[in-house]
Amino acid sequence: MQRLQAFKFELMPTGEQQRQMRRFAGSCRFVFNKALALQKERYEQGEKKLGYAGLCKELTAWRNGVETPWLSDAPTHPLQQTLKDLERAYKNFFAKRADFPRFKKKGQRDSFRYPDPKQIKLDQVNSRLFLPKLGWLRYRNSREALGELRNVTVSEHAGRWFVSIQTLREVEQPLPQSATAVGIDMGIVRFATLSDGTFFEPLNSFKRHEAALRRAQQAMSRKTKFSSNWKKAKARVEQIHSRIGNARRDYLHKTTTAISQNHAMVCIEDLQVRNMSKSAAGSTEKPGKNVRAKSGLNKSILDQGWFEFRRQLDYKLAWNGGYLVAVPPQNTSRICPVCGHVSAENRPTQARFACVACGFEENADLVGAINVLRAGHARLACEVSGAVMPPAAGTHRSDSGVAQCRA
Ligand SMILES: [Zn+2]
View: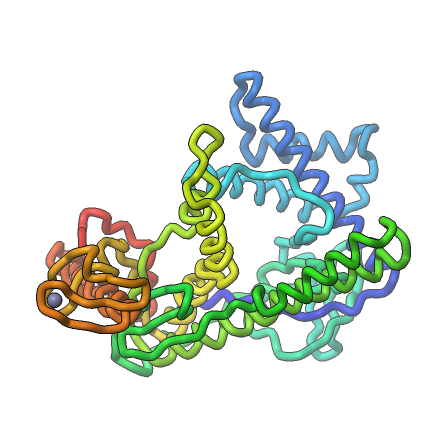
């Protein structure tokens, strides 16, 4: 099977390269925003949205025009890639996977991508990378990037520059190390509870750092904007943000690696995290109930990176020869795994499950995980009886369109 993998390194650019990269990122942001403004304008005038090719034509005009001649200083391909990103943002919006594309602001995930491997040279022996219009860049060579180079993304975070090198390589079709199946219940009190009884503590990295972050933000607000003290305080805020992000990523990777190595089939609730976080604020006509409580919950959900958790599980399972099964979240918290009785009363408290029919009692998250596993098994059985082959090892099942099967 073919494996796409990204290898990330910190760059050690010269001062001139840093200035260039900042300029390129700015040009990409400018092009994204200009293209988005153009699409909005066309929409308001009742015109059709431009496709990628149409946008590229516009880009050529902007680069050669008199208003923004500096655009031609930036490499062409990364500028075109931002138009691709805009296309994707629209696509995700129409597919209801994301909000309407927003204008990009300076300092928010500044990055640009080189899509053409022919223009890139990777010299791993000498820890350097050649990129168009930047020349040779030195990087912290912490590991070998395996496989054939596909594309390179340059990004800035908290004043440091990084490069993400995506490669493709042929790897042996892995055989699962384990044959067990497990269900997962995602929660606030416990980040993840497995149907075999193990569970993972909540991450809450944000909460832990929240006080420090608040202090740093207050300190920053007391300084005169753009003064040297303000810049120092701003760097401090960014540093804490980056620490939070690192701790979260680290934890998620450890958790998903452990789960994907120990199980061949993992069932998870198909929660629409985006909808959950949206409902809190409500609309202007119909403000959400319990906005405060809900936004607390939502913040917690987002804080713990459920989406990222699921994404990592999906690809790591595939790498290990296993697969992920997403099940609809119906009744998974209310059905009794012993007698099958479904009732909201089975859940006297958030933490406790107590069946009103048979008296079975257990931790509510564990019951949820057991029910998710059952739903996953039922879903697979349903697929097989519907003359669909059971999943081969390594295939992604999470997004398979088996909507007719109500497991
Ligand atoms: Zn029962």
